[in-house]
Image (cartoon, rainbow, N blue to C red; front, top):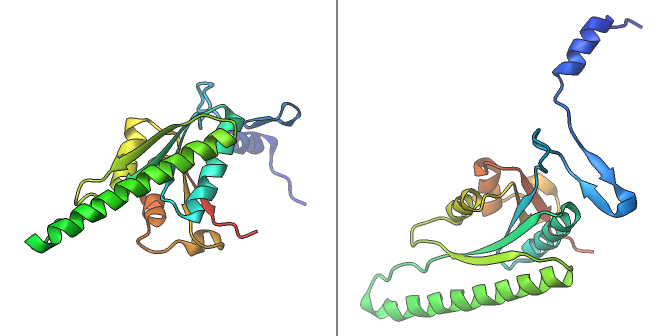
Length: 190
């Protein structure tokens, strides 16, 4: 067996980034990686929900993670704007669609508050309205910067991890656009 000279081994070891992970399982608390300033990297967790089963799984995981890390938790739902009417007879349809989207957002946020409270934690919640031509991803990115989040948690449909991301889905777009770490939670069917 050929050995690496000790100076070379030390240089390689010092070139590796150090990870500051600690686990305090006997206290029921898990600490995560720090940012080099002694601050927890995931001190502000943003969860985006859309009312799907996968987003409820993401909410449960995000809440549990925030609880274990004693992190701030914010849960958002983006309300997509109804399209502008093409003709005068469609104005009523747009109003009805907007009212239905608003009621759905209220129902989703109510469920979010109940779920987080049932887990014994607290969260800020917000239903954010997208502008008529604004994509959901843009609203989430704005919220990441505005709040400012350190970790984004979202659900994905399917059970096959990264391969199950549908091209053009919000989760798929966020894997490319998110300036912060992204935790994707698949739908569990157990």
